[in-house]
Amino acid sequence: MEVRDLISKGLSRLDERREQRDEELAALVIRNMEAMSDRRTLHVYISVLAAVNGLIWLCVAVFPRDVEYAWGKVSDLDDRIAAVMIAIIFGLGFWLTYTLFRLKFPNIEEQNLDKQFLSSFHYSQHSIKRFRIWVASVVGGMLNVLALMIFEIYRSHGW
Image (cartoon, rainbow, N blue to C red; front, side, top):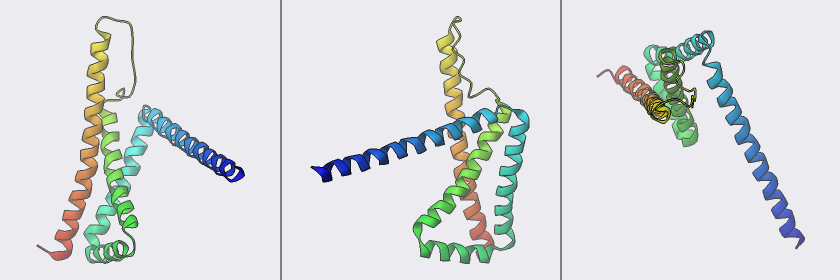
């Protein structure tokens, strides 16, 4: 009976820590989303993301064979590290695309549920626009990864 109690206490503490980490991550994302409503902060986000993405592209353009060698070593070492590298490049393209959309549509994340005529219709239209922006941001991230991979193959093998 004691072993079961210890296991159940350990699992409940693990669940509590997991929930706490999830809440902290959600709070961080919400804080960053709210920060993007400020135009100055949004320009800083765009500058930082574009600079980091540009540095990655510059490394591939200047040192294509070294990048290919490093990629081969990393992917041979552990597939998780390679997946994390792809996820970082995807994330840079994704957030850069999203911040550019936030520059065009600054109030896209605001939820306005006023009691006016056709408010549910306007809310639905706003939700559709937000969904399309998120989908376009995902496509932007995927295009960043694919274009970088194609460019790296082109530069290293000289098609």
